[in-house]
View (cartoon, helix red, strand yellow):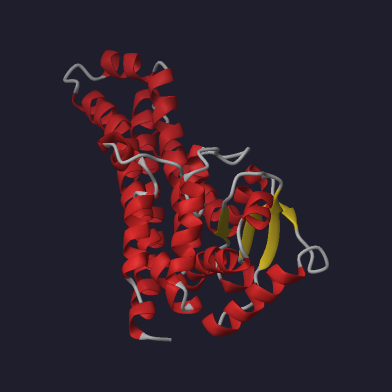
Length: 293
């Protein structure tokens, strides 16, 4: 394993632990505030920390199953797609990773994604549209992109991040939809704890969202480079991106929470799209790939 890949894997692992820590701290602070308002004491705070631990456990060990269920992916056997299995086998040998589970998305949109917490629990899902509308070289390039995510543990990082970001957003929504703010104002005349709770409920999910977007965009460039390295055909990946750029349809069961996992997410070059998109602009990805030899 080369030094750059080892560094990338180490950084991704650190991000997972950092996000788990951030979630636990946020839930702990919310729990302390709520326990203070309702006089639950340390028992209430401890209960919230237990909930944080359960969410962390589910995010780490079951994120792949959750993502595949959301996308309604179904297992794809070797007899159903022998050419695809041959492509994946060659690429896995070159990448020095185990053969992943293979799933099919019953969708005419051209897309794919990878998920799983480690090499032995990894999965690659490809859409029916991708297999039908792309050449074998283009399919190979897209699959190599997804396998690059698996090789560097990107899929675990982003699957866990998406679940933790979602949990932070849910907690913030619960805070605003409850009567906790009113109770806080009645109990705390100084308003300090109320202000802390309000700031946390606004900026925690917002900050988490933008960090998620930044991490997601950066890893797509790296996975594109990984595909070019594994196949030696960067222009095949550029060609696949061009085809996708002309098809504005989203996958049937596309979800905002899983958008970052897909090979491509339709967007424009507008400032708003660049700010909120989970992927870099397709045009920029194509330009970089076509410049490679």
